[in-house]
Image (cartoon, rainbow, N blue to C red; front, side):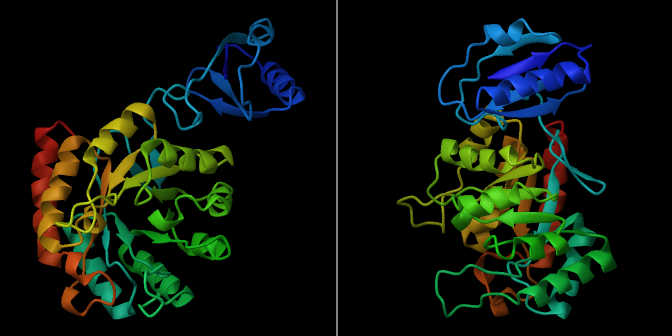
Length: 335
């Protein structure tokens, strides 16, 4: 349920509503808006008697919410959210470019790639310091040393940094270095990690699980937002299907569906969806046309020597060409 306050409602009116909600055994989360405040009721498994709230001072209306995910739903927040990372805004009509290597390998590697993607138009640098891999014998990342390299990239090139936290034990460390904390596909339903991510004061990028439904994805997002962190970005990165022509199947229809159901911005990772370089650029362009709020693209200056996901990494000149085409597409679609 959502309790919508009147425009002239006082702080005392709002506190009274929150107290009433808590007396009923539920959680009350205030959601200030441009014109009025709403209070979201969390924790109720069935309908709540709305008449009691409609009679309270300062209350305009009490509205039932039909979706199991409340705070990320457009029923609660009709207008698209804009997530601010420094002077970069994700959501609201533009296309935010995030690019970099799958894994941080060396300082020289990251500096070289960062210089290229910054020149091409990227504003956020992606790179994994901790790498959850299918094989225990594959490169697992440089850990904190990789985070320090990412911090040097930010300081030198002015690029904001997105990198993954693979468990709640290293979440704080990652948040200390990163501008955006990524929760990867394998951890989309790691609920202790999601709750912990909801308590940090950094934007979070939540990737869709490789076999997750849209509702499961949005419920995972609800875990983060319900813990107090509204700065959440969703990322479609392909789902596992019977097809073998690509690593995963990029579900562009999910971008449309989620943007209708949720106010959160949605970006697309065409690299992990494709798993092969020749498909990344066409998929990235399709994502822009369909309305994605941004792209998360892997770029490597020597993909044949990359320690992780070289076959799907664009070369710098390919990324530069992609950005030029994206600008044309964005202008053609009024973005």
